[in-house]
Image 1 (tube, rainbow, N blue to C red):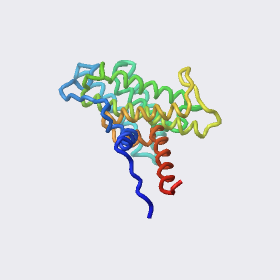
Image 2 (image 1 turned 90 degrees about the horizontal axis):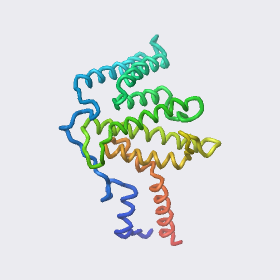
Image 3 (image 1 turned 30 degrees about the horizontal axis):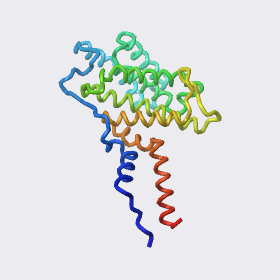
Length: 243
C-alpha cells in the first residue's frame, strides 16, 4: 500500500493561495455600487443611449454576417470594415467612451484571431487592439482602488481585462513556437515569460470583476502555480517511492 502524504497546515495554506488566489486574505476587493451612473465618463444618459445604439449597429453587422455565412453575404473582410468604420467614427467623436474601445478590440480579435496577432502582418492590428483595451481599462477603472464602480463598468472591466489577457496568452504560445526569444512592443522587449505572467495577472483581474473564463484561466496560466505544482508533484512522488 502506498503511504499517505500529509501536508502541514502552513504548507496547505501556502498552496491554497498559489492555486486559488481568491483564498488569500490579501485578495483585493472590488466594489460595485448599483446606484452609480452606468458610465463614469459620460453622465448625459441621452447621449449614452445614442452611443450604445451606434455600438449595436456595429455589432449587428457582425451578427448578420455570422447568420448568413456561407451564402451570398458580404465577405468577412467587408463585414469587418463596415463594423470598424462605425466604431472608428464613434470613438473619434467620443474618445472617452470606453465600451466602444473594448468592442473595437473584440472586432479585431474576431477578424484576425489571437494566434499570431502580435506577429508579422497582423502586428499593427494586434497592437491597436492592445492599445484599445489598455485605454478602455484606464477609462473604466475607479480613481482609487477603494472606490466603487457601477455594474456596467464592472462588466466592462471584466471583459477588457480578459480580452487583453487572451491576447497576451496567445503571444506566449506564439513565442514558444517562434525562432526568436522575444518581440518588441512599444519599444520594449517582451519574452514568453513576460507574456505569460502578464496574461495571468490580467486574467486574475478579470476574475475579480466576475468573468468566469478569466477565473479558470488565472490559475491555469499562473507560471508560479505551475512551478509550485511541479515541485509538489515531484516531492510527493519521491515520498511515495521512498526516494
